[in-house]
Length: 128
Ligand SMILES: [Zn+2]
Image (tube, rainbow, N blue to C red; front, side, top):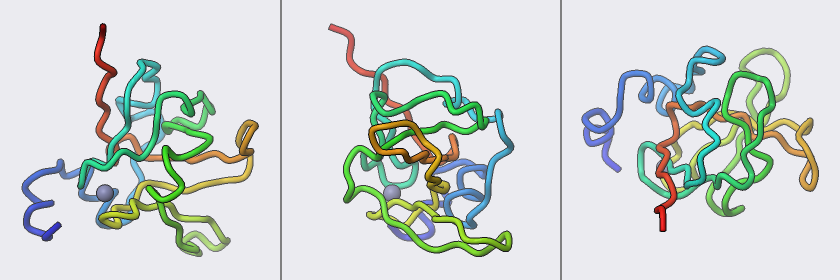
């Protein structure tokens, strides 16, 4: 997606996080406490990144998942920004920065995808 399209489509907060590797304040995101069934999409390109089935309450203040919707949906970079290694997570389709992944999550993966709420677009499941 062209830079100009992203500027027009997403909020200033989402731009800061996804395009400038920012982090939203803990407990600030609308989706942190969201427990509704539905899909979590990339706010920039709309690809499905996470599913409500893998969302859990980590207590960190950011939406947390123990696995991505699809291994191909996300990609990783080594991030030494704050002095030690963290694994940065971004959208594999449009490279939007999403958050970080840590290895203190629940089973079965043991992973904690710590994702900025503003980087996600939530689409509630259709009610029958
Ligand atoms: Zn994307």
